Length: 488
Ligand code: NOJ
Ligand code: CA
Image: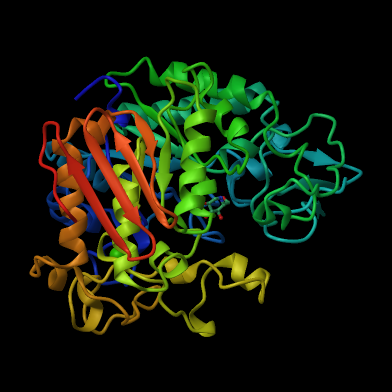
């Protein structure tokens, strides 16, 4: 594999709690991921990203870490992780973890350690900052008689990245996992970690803001994208470069402004991949999708490798959100994902065209949904367990065991689809094989071609043309260069 292995890799996001339960407690775990490596290898992915696996009280499903150097007991042990890393490597699959540097759990020992009080952001006079999860971003701490900052839940206090001790600690944490063989990290809420030192008030929403970003009710000028954040990622990248193969950093760069997104690639000395959420949050229409891709191609510096996802654990699954459950539309979307220039991230279940599954109120687990009821659909429907096979437990857990979230029934299982050459699963696998076999698709330049309204055509490299028809819902890949051109 090339030095810049992340540029030829297809990534796959695993949500461990919902991937495979290996011990019959209804919760997916690391041993379960290991047992399902066959599927990932058969599908043809090169790397997996595991959402947080570290110990956590699970107020925010693992995004509230209470120990950055261990594995959550419900998910397994460090030994289980080592076994997973070993077996994945034997199959040529790299493993990335999720690091949460913006905040810890309030039950992390650091938060109550008097010697580490200055590891968090405190004030006597709260400013106007609001939490992404609703309400003020400041909570009063009785014990200390001051307010602490939390950009998410009150039980997720923000770390103070102005403090050099925090910076040193996280470099050590990254090193801890890199030394075990972890190939890289997805960085949670990467653009928010360092805040304005003077804690200035955020200004009101401006008309140019993307409606999704404007939901916060203010412009996050002093809470997001502070210039100093780049110093931190330059240091992280330097650490990555001390390893062979180089370790990769993938930013959860939640921006709709592509210039600001581009800045996180630095001068090829910061993050190697930055998620492009403008695509995920745009309408699935030919001209809109084409517009996002063209502006991304323009905004990113020549060395930068774009990074695309249709779904993840925070948004409605693309088959529901974009395609209304229609598999023909889903085939167009999947063809787009796997033929664009850049790193594609599949979210577990995307390969079988899994839709959001209903979660009744009494089974809800998403704190965002419980804290802000009525705000929307919550994030549980896209986090339900993988349906591997028909029957009780769906191959995810043992029959008779209640899984942590309901499995639902509105799906065709992996086993069922694997046996059917015309299934969505085999279609996705075929696209992955084409991408692997065709250098145009893997690394060729992107160029828009002329096309009638409702159709988006583009060329990749010297000889591969992709046609996505958003009216007849058809997708075609034609290739005159090496690698087979196949109609899909
Ligand atoms: C982004 C994560 O993807 C999401 O699940 C989490 O709730 C927030 N960051 C806070 O960590
Ligand atoms: Ca389990």
